[in-house]
Length: 246
Length: 246
Image 1 (cartoon, helix red, strand yellow):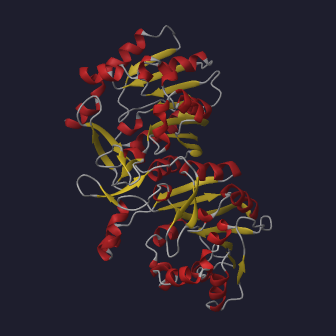
Image 2 (cartoon, each protein chain N blue to C red):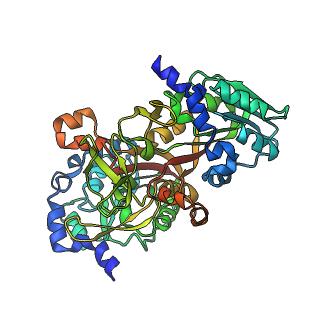
Image 3 (spheres, chains in turn red, green):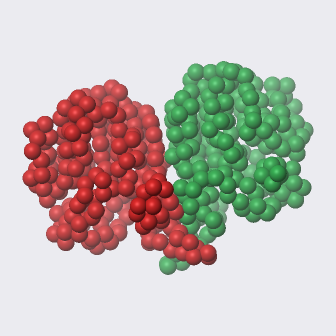
């Protein structure tokens, strides 16, 4: 049962309290340095039917409606997240539902875009979800998602070290050994699943997606000037951003 | 002039002497542990017109003819390599030529497959070469290549370290800072060009290629049983294998 508990970590009170104070939760999309890069990967949203996989507090769902999306379905495993998303939203074209992406079923060809931010690295079975999303999209539909980068996730002890010049350096080991990784992040032993970039991209291609763009988020010089703590992100990518289309 | 000298490192006598003793040069394709993975990514070769970019001693060019390729054009910057390739080949359907891939021109729609093994990380301008290859392929033609993996290349000091448990660990820094990397490998200051996976894949997509498969080479359990020194390769990928099609 441990893995189910870990996946419901967003409903752990201590975790949720810490998580809710993250800049990206307090300030929304503009609190996430990768947001401009994600936005650039999104297709025009006007009139689109969108599913937001791991919608959290609903920041992206609401923004997509502001861009003219016809309807947004926001799904999240966490009761806490969905309750707060509903409380923060006044829009009959946005629906939030509790859903487990490991067992998700979606209607066929019902969406023009599937979007997911920092959620799919919690999934044990990425391939299944990719096939469900492919069937749920219309031909030409888009799938844009971000996950933790496998360089960031792979190592047994994923934290900064120094190289012989004292430079901030990230350790990589176990890269080809896919599967469970446990880290302490607002709670002990949060469970994530490491997959190589190859596996992530080949799962998409195998399901029938075409890869449109792959970004390994790195802050711009302007972002670093405004927020110097971002400088370390050029040393190793924390986030992988993928755009694919059916 | 330094960079031009570095790129011609294969014609440096000391480098060439060391390089020529590598298992993959002595034993050919079967001396390269990634060869079975590359072979699995290749399309059927019978009747195909192939260009081998960085053909070295011609091992792959000759193998492709054995698989029924109609003709192979092997290109290499190194006079040493091309001379040896010619000396080792008795086949009128294989032509070897000295060529600089930075300034290469190829006839349009003249090839069914472009192949390149461990060469393109020496190129300063990967995007130009990709566009040249795209034009040189027939529609539906394939581009299969291997390069050093950016995880392997990125760091200022790319060598094994130990984590706090003593586990073999690879350092990553400067990942998002693309461009020159100099390492000592049979010669001092061999010049290579680091590019992120994103840049490599987006260059292909931008030129009109479709990504078919991305592999980050890791040895199989059988390979490790036969050659235990390969075990460390599961800790971090050294090689990136890409299959794309026009």
